[in-house]
Image 1 (cartoon, rainbow, N blue to C red):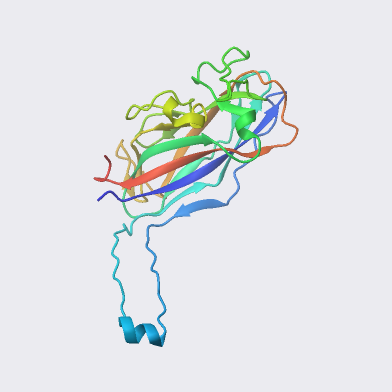
Image 2 (cartoon, one colour):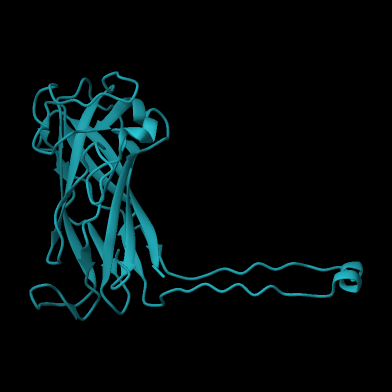
Length: 254
């Protein structure tokens, strides 16, 4: 049986006119997932006991006690209104607090349903295509240009095994491909997915190069590029998008 759990990190975006602005640090707040289960109780009155008898239904599920994975709840970014390279914090990580290495089996990203985010932003088609023009803006599912523009985030593992992932607009539904297909209706261009098979190193376990990870911190380099924006963001827009990680133990990866 496949055992997995999902954790997510939200994306906050700001637009700037100059690249010299200091990038904000991550908050200490994290989203932590530990495997476990829950039970349900049913109360019986005397009449039920007499007619039905007292009974407890036994439900059994499995879990992995060595799961303990933590990510920052928010990832702040700065987009240049002129387009091209933006700014990202340098201390993003996934912490493996368990006793064994685990996999990031799948990464999913989506523009948030909250507020006007789906009207304001779209994921770009390619990371390299985000530059100081509006030529590569991806329209919303309604066929209109987003109110601000398009962006792509690139996530590159640092010191642990796995390929870089770019949060591009959904274009296909092939296994392992980026994105979701047109048959998903209004989710097209607003969601995407990738199977990276990242290996998260636990504390005192070895990475792909044979080096020992002393604290279970698996650092990820974040980069962001955007198209030329139609307007700047007056105040930071929080929760613009989310990144969801599906975590699996070794041997459970499909």
